[in-house]
Amino acid sequence: IPQCWRFETTQRGRKREHYQWNMDIVGVDKITAEVELLAAVVEFFRAVGITSKDVGFKINSRKVLGAVLKMAGVQDQQFAEVCIVVDKLDKIGPDAVLEQLTGCLKLPQEVAQKVVDATKATSLDELATLSGTQDSEAVAEL
Image (cartoon, rainbow, N blue to C red; front, side, top):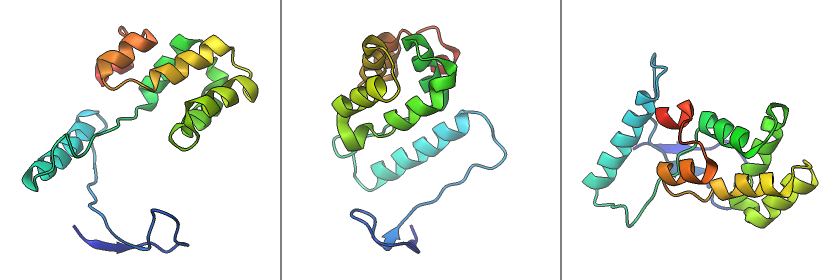
C-alpha cells in the first residue's frame, strides 16, 4: 500500500500525507467487478486480522437509490436535488435532511420520511422491506 500525497489544503481528517490502496476496474461494466473489489478488501482485512467487529461497509448504488426514491414518491426531475440532500446525511443528520427535503425541496413529509427511513437500512433485505423495492431490478442486481 503506497504512501501518497494530496495537493490541497489540509482539512480535518484529510492529511496531506496518507496511504491509499488503489484498485481499478478495466473493461467490465457489470456489478460483479465491484463485488470483486469488495472481496479483495475483505480478504486483505482478514489477512491483517481485521474483522467485522472492527470495520463495516456501506454500499451505495445510484440505481437502487433511484428505485427507492421512485417508490417513495419522488418525481424523476427531483432525483438530482434529492441526491444532493441525502448525501449530506452523515454530516447534518436525519432531522436536518428531513427539514431540507420538506422545506427547500417541498417534498411531502411522508415522502421525505420514507427516503430517510430507507437510508437507515443495515442490509439489502431491510432496505427492500423499508422502501418497498423487493421486486426492483436494481435491488435484484445488487
